[in-house]
Structure formats: C-alpha cells, structure tokens
Length: 387
Image 1 (cartoon, rainbow, N blue to C red):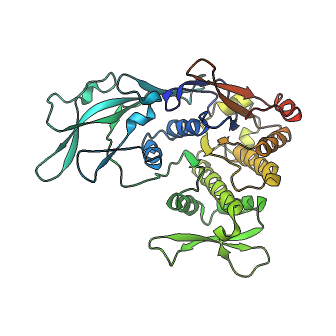
Image 2: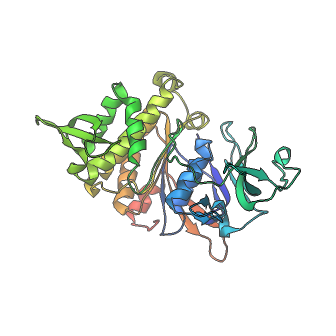
Image 3: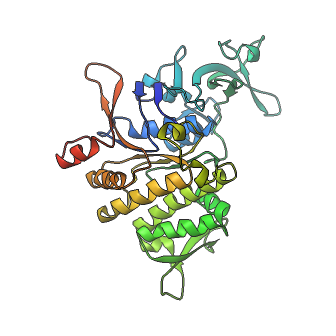
C-alpha cells in the first residue's frame, strides 16, 4: 500500500510530493489544480502497465495527425509538463519506501515509421537513450519520424511503446479499477460483473446498492437493440419483474459502478489475501507495508444524494478493510467531505486522510496539504475551506 507519492513532469504537475497517504484518501482542491491528473498518475503507477495511458490519451482526443491519410498517432508529448519534448523525464514513485514501491520513469523516444511495399508498418528507434541503448537501430531507414514512449520501471525491463492508436480500449487490470467522472465504459463494467457473477462477491455488491435503493437482484443480459451489447436489469424489493437499472436514475447507476469495481478487486485479491483474522492485529504501519489493490474514483459524489454521503463513506471504509484496498477519490462537495469526516470518526481501525491540492504561489509546483483524523473535525466544525 502506498504510504506516499511523488510526481515529476507529468501533465499539470512540474512537481507534486504527497508525504502521507492513508487507506482511504479524499482529494480536494479548486478546479484545474490537478485532482484528476493525480488519479491518472496513480492509475499508471499502480496498474504497472503503461498501456493504460493509451486510454487517457484517446479519451482526451490527444492525437496527432500523421502524414498518412486516415491515420493518427497518440500524442505522448501531451503527458509531459508544459508539453516539453525530448530531454525531460516523467517520474512517478513512492517517497517513503515500504518494499512495495518502485520508480516508474517515462521519456519521449524518437522512432521512425517505416512502411514496406505491401503496406506493413514497422517502427525503428533512431535515438539512443539512457534506458534503451540495447534497442537502438544502427541504420536509419527512411520514413516519417514520430515519438514513442520509453518506459522503465525500477527492477523491470525497459520498454518502448509505439504511438499508433490501438484498436482496443479500456484494458481490464487485476490490481486497479478506475471510475472516471463519466460512466464506466459498458465493456469494462460488464467484465467486472462477469468476474464476480455467481460468487459471494456478487451478493455483497448487490448489498452495497442498498445505500441508494432496495435492490434484491441484478442480472446482466443481452441487449436486443445492440449487437454486441448487454444491459443491467434490477429487481426491486417486493417487485415481481426486473427493470433496466439505468431507469432508476443516476444514484443507483453510480453505485453499481462503485460496487462492481470494489467486488472485482476483492475477487482478484481473495486468492492472495491473508484471512481477516490474521490481519486483525496489524498496526497501521504494517497494513501500509502490504501490497494492496487500488480503487480510483473521480468526483465520487456524482449522482449520490447529499443525505447518503455518510452511508457511502461508511461502506467504502468497511469494504476497503475487508478487501484490503487502497482508495483514492476526488470531490468538489462539502457534503461529501462532511460525510467522509463522520464515517472516519466512527471507524477506529482505518486510516483516512483528506489531501488538498493547491498551486504554490510564485512557483510552478503544486503543494499537498494533509488533513488527518485529528484535524478534520476542526476543519468541519469551523467550516474551514479546504476544497
């Protein structure tokens, strides 16, 4: 579990250092301060698969037109602070080592796009870098020069990712689930649900939906209007027939995404997780030293009525401990922060912190103010603005 996190040269962050993280972390701050960017950096780091960057680039339409009609490249340069080109490295790492962190380093690498007489495309590296000397091309073939992404994780092999736009999107990862501000793509949500279907994790996911609606049954069935396509049906308590879950409104649909993500991560970790009774004596330091799966939620309050925020956070704290998850969520809502504070006050085992991001006056870097368990009641009581 991450105890701390540092970012250098990634998107809006020239430098961000968060000295302390908890099991459950609520990230707040003004618009455009970098809350979503922090989740994106955590997504890349915890997934241990830089290909998740392709999802974010494609979602943001960060593409470059190529010299070939109908072709576009992923704009890796947009990942770098100030859209700087060569010579700058992105660094993501834990600040305080626990044995579970490593450093992830990324840089732009010049490669040449080469197409043969049969239309087959290949890429050749033409610039030797510190991490990729063994992959350099001795002879420079003719072709269009583009930027690839060189990635090196401490303790692992260096890799170069080609900038072509992938045909697939939203690769499912066993260690991390990311719920964006907009709804989770239907294909990914379906795969999360498929992974828990028929298990106790499915039952617990349905129970989680009690926060917003008394549901007794959820089924994922073929959508007759789309091929391929499936739709979630839900049956309410004391009702005979199921109805489309989306017809119940934004709250149940948002909760389904959260419940499915949590249950999916719980299912993935269950085979490797120590029994709860063996972990019950863990100190917070011991808990933070274990490898944990990661849940990321952007604007967690979306669709959830303000009167339900306390119930939502109590559920998240309970499931985070039960499934050994580390949770990072962003919010603009004061009601959400109040709900977080009340749930944390009633939970003596779990460590929760509020992280306020703010621009450092006169500098390019971003600061992180940590509000811990002891300080949070004072913030709420005195209505101190930390968003």
